[in-house]
Image 1 (cartoon, helix red, strand yellow):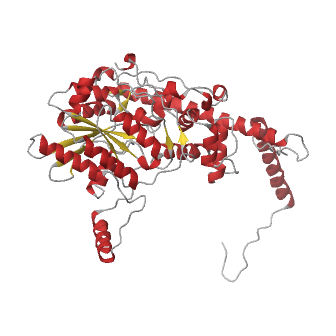
Image 2 (cartoon, helix red, strand yellow; image 1 turned 60 degrees about the vertical axis):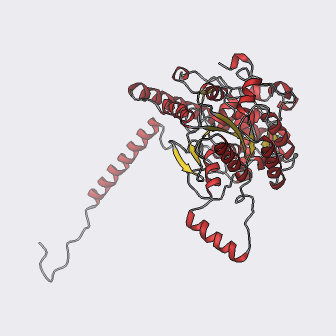
Length: 487
């Protein structure tokens, strides 16, 4: 006990006791170091001195080291993807309910049955690749005098000469409408404020993102058809097509407001949505057509949702797309130096955009996602050449074409398309990348077609380095589908 007024007890100990404590501490620390040495913990890493500046071929050595690192990253990504696919397959076996794919197949058939006019929305950058033979054949087999129209969307991303040639080819089968959707629509209140401001000042906003071209032509065409067929002055129009061709943007542009959810990401539309465009026209927005697994890798990269569903990595999709393009045009479009394969291109592209990870390494995965968004969204200009000698597909004949073109004012449609082409500002031929199309994309529209087929294996990096697609015969890739593909 410490009594008041007295000093506190001293903490000093005897020398023998202090030396004994110090000896035990040294022995304990020595034991910890010995155990850590056995486990390999705490070893000092040798500092990487790098490649000396005086070493010959320093740039080649650094490039090879970067290639090895990128390949290791890709192998890790493939292993991770394989594990994810195994877990997904296990969950799918345990779940007895119908999959989302079966639901989309049923919805596609339901749109065809409930609509008087079916509009197949095509991306003007690859119209032939956006066509679905199974869909067109299903429409022709349905009764009730159903009509099929082609709508060529995103024409502002394609050179004018290419759009004119594709319109001529498509109009040989079904009526085709040239269209450019508005990409900057806002809520109704904001639109009303802008309209009042424009009325007071006499200013009309005709910027590239706001303006919509071809909407008046389409509404006039549908209105005349409804009045001429005796359907009570009204017509129900169903919009069909592959993901990200602009179905929801088409409805928003005609409505003049954001009635449907639309964006760059594919597969946003998940259910039906009826939108009244005018007194006599009602449109049905539907999910995208499911692409069959038997399609080529190039078609699946742009038309399917494999990347969003984690069935394919963005690196594989980018590699597939680069195989279908001219290397020099890609270098000029993205302002990158010469590259030998897709990994090296993504490395240059990431450094150009500033997509860097810790340590200054390029983030190739982010660069691949950005590159794929440019190709699937309404941003990048690329085009496919139209066939010089178009021919009818196996399920079409001259009599069917004549029957499907009845009830439409084709002369007025051609004049309206010409007026639309005069109003739109098109990109130059030199600034647009030429894409080698793989032809029509097979879709799944029946329960018998819903089969878990294994997708075709893509080319390896060694095969990718062999030659360029610019030396291939373009005419062979733009022929219409053969009879064996129409099943």
